[in-house]
Image (cartoon, rainbow, N blue to C red; front, side, top):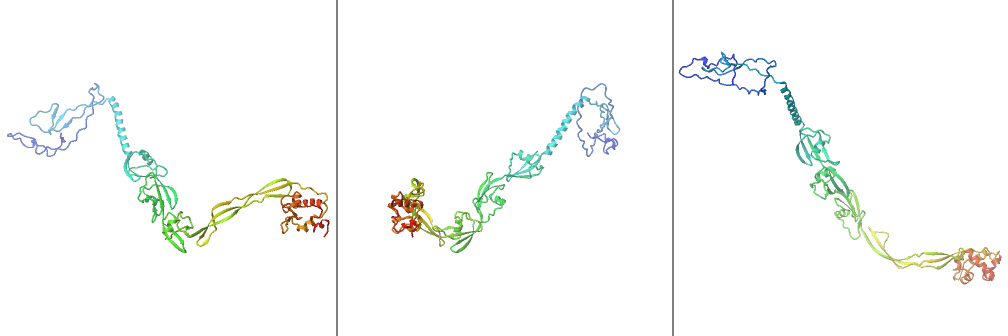
Length: 463
């Protein structure tokens, strides 16, 4: 419904401005533009029961509602027509709201306010972040406060070898980027040395760059573009090295990534023949800057027969005077055949090496009896004589003396028969000097100085 203030002049085309034409009916002319009136707010609910005694509500002023002029039409009941053609309606009284209704509306209003505030907080805590896990990017909405909460929310477990950027305790905001790179075990054999390292790189090439390994000219057991999974990878890398090879009086220097010294020598153009070898183990790993000398080996075998020494077994004999030894078996050495390897290295003869031994004859042990019987202190009838003078005359005072014929021996030049008759064992020259003197005294008691025709007079001090 259009409204117009009462002090607004009438439109020039309104019926009041022109006389009416009795020949045709008169129609009101609408204004060229009717202003938009917004829809009135909804009237709150008013209970049907109104108390008989109002709480101080008064009379509202009359409400003016503009209407179009009507020709000879009746006026709405309860209203009057003003001079400007508007109709005044009688005022209506509004009953005041009851306190009980107000009390019921307050909790509802609080719930609505709480929900509105919660929705605002809900929207405020929601963050849009970008999560990159091992190169896989995705945008997430999260309510987590920090990086640790986001990882837990996504079920991502990280360990000591994993890399998280930014740090786990960093607070999150919308637009943040979180990078998670899991560690991968790398079983690396670098120039013959074994290592176990961890890397967050996803390819072999990136891992080697991360570890600072020089790969130009190097040998790799797998392609540099090979992907490294979470389970890891075994990788053998041999970098390029400089090795000097000395052979046949010449020096050769090569750049190589060989796995063994033998391969490096072959790459230097040197051929190993027969027993040829190198100054370092041929199967060893060649180091950078190492010098390897080739050893030209020539060799042959020699066979020799050598004696095998025998052992000596000694037993005690109480029938022999102390200091007396009797050899029952002189023993015999064995014989063995020995094969030696004789080598020359770069023309220089080396000590022979024993290669094989064969026993041709077993050795036989020597058996000796050793006397334990005490010697008598003296021999009656033979004391007081110059036995030293007799010994000097017969043998020069040497207990082991033997005459040129081999018949007589010892200090007093006993023959074997006489010696055995006197109780001696073995050869007289093998007996100790005290026993020889003892046997000589016994012989003197039996036969006097006759057994020593040339020197017997020395017993009494004769010249």
